[in-house]
Amino acid sequence: MNSRRLAAWYLGLQAALVCLWWGMLVVAPATRTWFEPPNRPEVLLAFWLPDALLICGGSIVASLAAARGSHRAAAAAWVTLGGLAYATLYCVGLVIHAHGPWLPVITMAPACAVTAYCAARL
Image 1 (cartoon, helix red, strand yellow):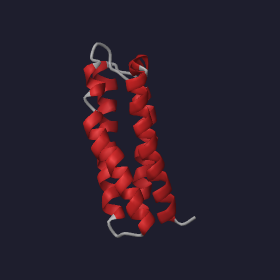
Image 2: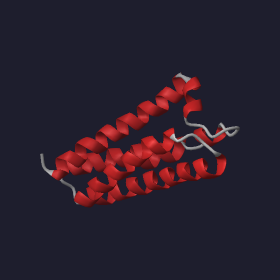
Image 3: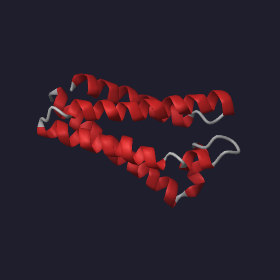
Image 4: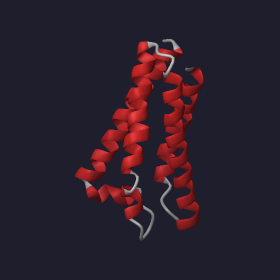
């Protein structure tokens, strides 16, 4: 499988998984505690809009562009990476400063790394 097809596949999967993750948080609110910093539950839910636009939307656009062989696939993947990198570093900051849970970092760091690989290969 060439890198363009691999990136298209991965970015599509990433979009689906992030959407499913948000669905889980809505349908099963008890799962939010796995990702929330202590005494600040509003912080987690404040991320729905940037996640929807930059990570889900960016992944979908990059996936479709890569599948079609568009020269815009790389730009979309880099935008998606920017959203992921910011969110990942924010989660690291929450762990350091607010003693938040490590699960957000553990789940976001691999997505960030693989998206960086996809962006570089596109």
